[in-house]
Structures are given as C-alpha cells and as structure tokens.
Image (cartoon, rainbow, N blue to C red; front, side, top):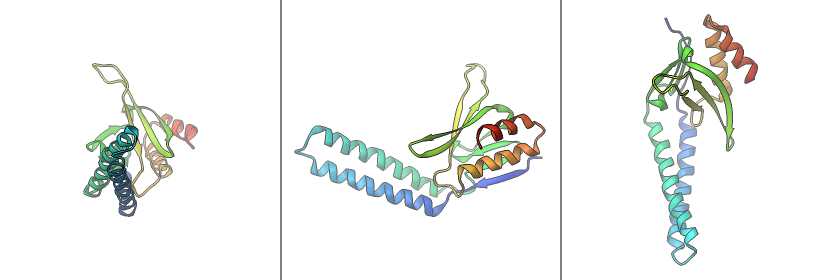
Length: 163
C-alpha cells in the first residue's frame, strides 16, 4: 500500500500576494493603454500585451484559491500534481529529475520515460509558487519516498545531483 510522505497545499497568503500583484500590473497596463493613445504604437502594443498577460495570470492565481485539497502529493509509489489535472506519475515512469531556475523561480523538472507510440520522452515541471512549501521541502520528501522504496538508484541520483 502507498504511504503518503508529504502533501503541499495552496498557501492563501502567498496566493493573495500574487493576486494583488497581478491586479496592480493589470491596472498599470490599463493606464498605459488609456494614456498611450497618442504615443508610440509600441507603447500601445505593450499595454495591450500586459493587459492580456497580467489579466490571465491574475485569473489563474485566483482559480488556484478555489482548488480544495493538496496540490502536490508525494508517496512511496510516485508523485501526484493537482495542477496537471491530478495526474499521477509513478517513480518507475520517471527517467531523470533535475532542478532549474528560470527568472528567479526554482522548479523541478521530471523527465519521463518514452511512452509508445511516439517514443519521445515527456517533461513535467513542478514549481512551488503559491504553495506552503519550498523546492527543498519537495526534494526532501522525494528522497524520503525513495528511501521507503526498494529502488535506491533513483534516491542516490537525486541526492547526489540536487543537494
């Protein structure tokens, strides 16, 4: 039977901060669009792009508040991530894991084993933005889950490459 090692839920204060930032940036884009009528077309394009981009991101963060239950669940059998439609990925389906930082956001990249018929490996990224834990908490939970499993090679690979 699977033993749940760790769960990570939405952090309401973090999400409210992201929503507030999104609202401020969306309003700044609206002001840019309304005041840039006689300005350069590049400023107008930037204003509309900001309006769409920041507006979408704000709505996305607000929708995360409505999701009940854990967003990420690490168990001895694998990992479940609620932002992927609650997709479960078993440890045997993961070929490699690596950490990556993009624009000061750390994330865990899961490289999945090739799946027929395409034969291409798929990737899944996990970011801890808006959650009640950090990437190091997630990596510790993964190491603990692998310590319970019989396959120590994956736990050794994570421990040696991502500490």
